[in-house]
Image (cartoon, rainbow, N blue to C red; front, side, top):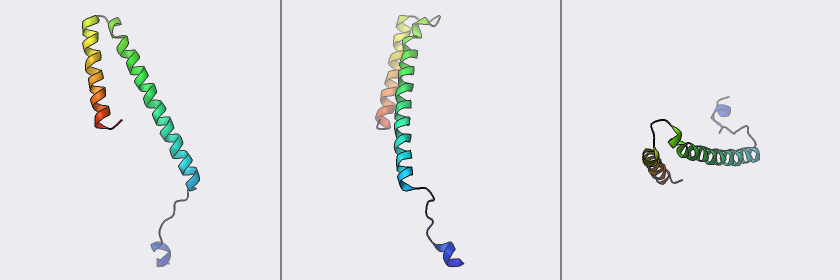
Length: 78
């Protein structure tokens, strides 16, 4: 009985299925990131429509967020 407990645990999942799952997951994550980035850019472009935010302020806000985005992508190697 003790020998059975000491044996190495084997994953119950088929390796081919897990490989396909991981590839699909990575592709979905990449697509979601691209979609999120597109939506974020659209929001930044609409800043001027917010009451109290003019062209100059919208430009400053856009510049700030884009700098933060660039620094984050450099930091995380994206």
